[in-house]
Length: 351
Ligand SMILES: Cc1cc2nc3c(=O)[nH]c(=O)nc-3n(C[C@H](O)[C@H](O)[C@H](O)COP(=O)(O)OP(=O)(O)OC[C@H]3O[C@@H](n4cnc5c(N)ncnc54)[C@H](O)[C@@H]3O)c2cc1C
Image (cartoon, rainbow, N blue to C red; front, side):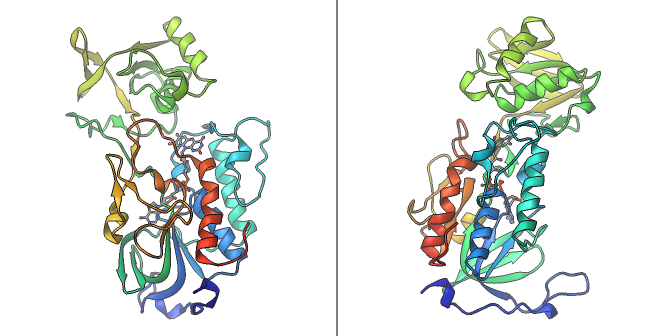
């Protein structure tokens, strides 16, 4: 049955309590989208243009994943590959898009298409009752006939599992260099995030030591404009690198590294552990979505994006699981998901 022929939703204001939370009977919708990253938003535009009945939820603000990127970070993807819903991205300097430009762009797309997104409303569980999905969110219960999970793949840092990792001077997110001014900063990792943090923090006046398990940086995993920069900083001893080293323990004021020459303790006022991120698979487990391999990739039909759970679709980098090696699925690979889902749902108009 086409989604167009499913019953229309009635949105009942009496479902809210005085704090604005939903409290009454569960709201019924044809389609629920979980996740308002770029791909969730692109899908919402297509559904809105097809006049479909849908509800869109996000645990945080629009573009939550990008909001915790480092300030002024430049995407490695080109603007035209990041653009969604046919809306071009223009930058002031015709260079790569920055975090700030992309967040502003996402807000503009949401406003342009008048999208209603229930932000700061996390979906905590999904249960299928007959043909209907019951979603329990941080604010309400919601029933949906079809469900699209567009939750991305970067929910939490990949932990090293060493003592001291939870100490207050240790962070798994690099947000801005200023706080490391004049500090001894040890950065764990040797890919994009770690190299970028090392360059920026050194320039902001930190004494930076990079600690990486490889014997050299892999050019294919570092933005091409960062590699010559870090090599020059290492050559001039502006940044130190300890290669072939893995962290064994973090202590107040130091980090212990395991190196081929044995254990070595390095002073550290702050430690940035930038070793990648993992997907939270709770929703997949609750909904009964099959996952495969060590990376726990959700299984889906490539033509329709539907999973083994009938009526439950995947969009965006949510298909990635938790990659053990390099991150292979990025925004530009995911625009096609929108058309596939629109076709499979039978809502008609394609963007
Ligand atoms: C530093 C850094 C740089 C990057 N640079 C690039 C780049 O140049 N190009 C590129 O393509 N990619 C890049 N990425 C990866 C990029 O973040 C993803 O490709 C992009 O965010 C994926 O979009 P998405 O819509 O699939 O998912 P996301 O943007 O991750 O959106 C998922 C959304 O789902 C929401 N959500 C999750 N769980 C729930 C829940 N239970 N209930 C409700 N909402 C939920 C989240 O809050 C989030 O808003 C980078 C990542 C990092 C960390």
